[in-house]
Amino acid sequence: MNQAINSLDTTVDLATILSAQKSAQREDPYPSALVRVDRLDRVIDLVVRNEQKFCDAVHADFGNRSIINTQSLDIMPVLQAFKHAKKHVSHWMKTEARKSNFPLGLLGAKSKVEYLPLGVVGNISPWNFPVQLALMPLADVFAAGNRTMLKPSELTPSTSRLLAETVAENFNQDEFAVIEGGVDVAKDFAGLAFDHLIFTGSTQVGKLVASSAAPNLVPMTLELGGKNPVIISESADLKLAAEKIMWAKTMNGGQICLCPDTVYVGRARLNEFVDHCKGAVKAMFPDIEHDADYTHIISQRHADRLADLCRDAEDKGATVISLGSSDGCRVPPSLILNASNDCRVLQEEIFGGLLVVAPYDKLDKVIDTINSGERPLVLYYFGKSQTEIDQVTFQTMSGGLVVNDLIAHCLQENLPFGGVGASGSGAYHGFDGFKNFSHAKAVYQQSKFDPLKMIRPPFSTGLRGY
Ligand code: NAD
Image (cartoon, rainbow, N blue to C red):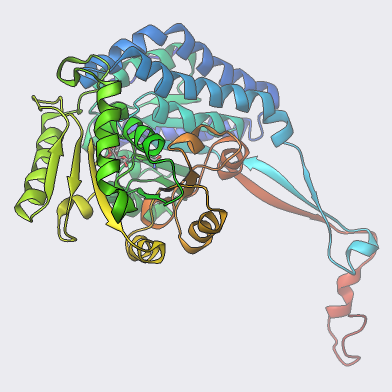
C-alpha cells in the first residue's frame, strides 16, 4: 500500500497527511462495526506476522532484551487489547438510552447518547515498551471509529522503522500513518490540529506537549510517569511481597511507568524485608552480570543518570546496597536505605532498578507523606487488613490501586488505565478507552407535545406546572 514515511522534517508534510485523514473521515464519519473490525484485524495481522522481527528490533534497540520480555510485555498485551476490542466493538457502539427528566419524560420525549468517532487521533509514544505503547491505545482508537497518526520514539529506531514499514504494508496513509523522527518532528507533530492527542511519556515532556496542543484546543489523554509507592502492612506475607516487588522492579530493567519506587515497611521488619529482596533477585537472576534475561538500560545517558542518583543519595548519608556490579548499560538493581527527603532519588522518577526502602511506624503518617507528593500513577498495598485497604483506597489519590500484586491492573481490559494529576489525565483500555476516544453525543428528541411553551413569554401568567 502506501510508502513508509521515513524522514519528515516539515510541518507541511505532516499537515498534508492530517488533512488527508480528516477528509477521509468526513467521507465516512461513522464507520460501521465491520470497517472497525477490519482495521483491528489488520493490526493483529501485522503484529502476528512480524512477531519475531519485532522481538529482534526491540532487542537491538535495548542492547539486550529477552524475547520472552518482548513477547509477554509488548506483543501479548497488544493482541489481547485488539482481540477484546474486536469482540466487543458492536456492543460498545450501541445507542445508550437515558431517562428523560420529569415531566418531559412522561410526555414521551426521548433522551439517548450516541458514541461518535472524534476524527483523527494523534499518538506520541515512548521507548520503554516500543510496540505495546505505540499500538495498544489504537485498539480503542480504531474501535471508536477514528483514524490515526503515530509518532513513535526516536530512542528505539529499529522498532519505529519496523512499525512504519509494517503499518504502510497494511494500511492506507489516510487511515493509519507512522511518522518517524526525533524531537523536532515530535514538536511539530504535537502542534497539529488533531481531534484528540494521546501522549505517553514523561510528565516533563507532557507539559510541553500540552502547551503545543493548546493553541488548537486539542483535547488530550496524558499517560505520564512519576513515583509509585508501596505500603507493606504488618499483616503482609513479607517474603511473597519482596518477591513480587523485586520481580516488578527488575522487569524491563526497572524501566516501567508502573515500577515500585519507594517501599514503606514496618520498622521492625525492614532488615528482614531487605534480606528477602536480595534472595528474590538471586533466585530470578543467579548470575545477573551475565544473565540474558536481565534487560539493559536504554542508553548510557540513562545509566549515568541512575549512577548519579546513587551517588547523590550516598553523599547525603544513605546506604546503597547494589545487588550486582554495573557495566555500561547493564545496571543491576540496588536497594537504598536511610534516604533523606532531599535525596534526588526521592524527588525524581527513577525509571531503573533503584528501590528506596523506608521504615514506618504508623500507616497514617505514610498516607500523609504520599498525599504531600505528586499523585502517583499507581499505589501498591500488601496485606490482609480490609480496614487498611479501605483507608488507602479512600484517603489517597492515584491513577490506580493494586492490592497484593504489582502491575496486574493494566492487564485487565475491564479496568480504566490512566493517571491523575501529574501522572496523567484520561484513561484507556476496553470500553473506557472506547469512550475516551469517542464523543458522547447527547441526542434529545422532543415528543409531539410542546412542554417548553410554559417558559415562553409573555410571563404575565407566571410559571405553571413545575
Ligand atoms: P519522553 O517524554 O522523553 O518521550 C516520549 C515521546 O515524546 C517520544 O516519542 C519523544 O519523541 C516525544 N517528545 C520528546 N520531546 C517532545 C516535545 N518537546 N514535544 C512533543 N513530543 C516530544 O518519555 P520516554 O523517555 O520516551 O519514556 C519514559 C517516560 O514515559 C517515563 O516518564 C515513564 O513513566 C513514562 N511512561 C508512562 C506510561 C503510562 O502509561 N503512564 C507508560 C510508559 C512510559
